[in-house]
Image (cartoon, rainbow, N blue to C red; front, side):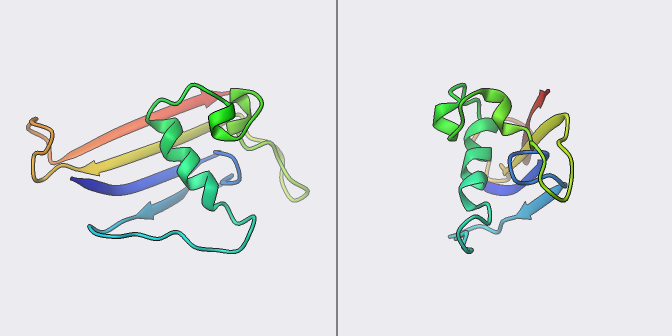
Length: 106
């Protein structure tokens, strides 16, 4: 089993829909300071059920929703979808993919 894809929309710095597709094996997320690397790991924690805003580097849970910038306004919903490849049936169900989605509305 491995993380197959992660899709973020309106989550923290990811105002627009952004999909990351992963292959089996090692994946490294790199980029300059402020480019959203930590927000990727926050998105994984959040979609898997994290309830603490502090664990997600925020003051309130609403902080996960894109709050706007000088170039664009705030959005009303944050959505993250995580897809696991279960073709090896690590989780003993009859599905080769497992999708988990979490949404929060302002």
